[in-house]
Image (cartoon, rainbow, N blue to C red; front, side, top):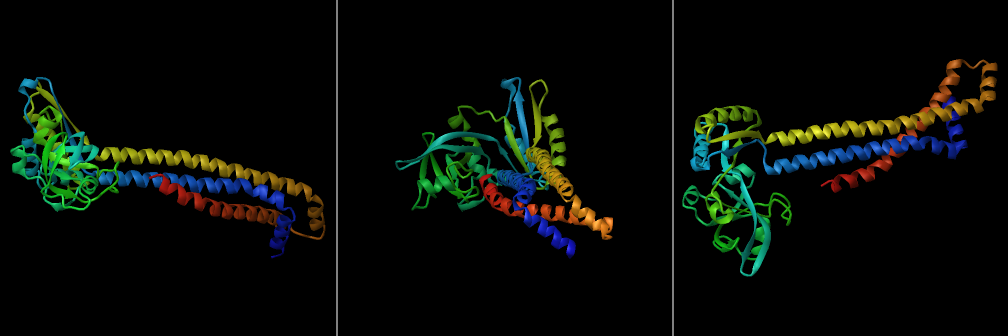
Length: 348
């Protein structure tokens, strides 16, 4: 207790120097908290983003050398995915999109993301039906002009009425609204809810082309992705003549894995920077304590002359250094909390 009292007296006696000594620790701890909050917030945002897009997807990319012999792979792949792979596959849909205005009764939503998909588009893209119904298989076959609206488009064009059964103009073509999706991304103009889904077979009207070069296969579990990719590889090799075209498979989870790897690397770098700040703060305390020992040589000599053991003298200065470090850490934590809570929401 006597050593503690003397250490506290020494710290309070020279408040300015004690504060400057703690400043390095304060800055270091504050920096650590803010950097950790930034990395954690960004990682959470990216994870949420990929979850909204939908995970466990396999993308089939097609490229045709001889377009005269090219054929539509969507229906055969849907039959294979929903047949032999039905225990592992939740849906198959083309990956086609464009941006077009959607209009109704004088109101318009510009630059709407229009997705041209199959009747399984919602399952593949993580959309949930709110009202009405989804696109039907026969509407795909008949090239029917029907659509399902995202929540932002539906709320903007139909703020007070039920959109089901109404006809909207998409890119100048009339489409019957058969359903709406639940809000999944905030319902804002620049969100994933600013969209409409239509049958992919109307691509000739909206895209001026009937080619489908990208198809998404939704797998029911992460553990089945590799198996599905392997079996798709074998199936596609039988379907596509190498002289006519080629194909490639991409694991949709790889983007999220790469993002997590980037966050890990960033955490290491930022952790190193924060550690340097703490190291500099610790060196500052060490230097000040060396100066303190030099200044108090007379006090140390008196203690030795009255029989004070070496460990007691060393312990007093170590205790003083520990108190300075602890106080600096506590102040740094207090100062780091507010920026941390502010930084994390801003990362979104």
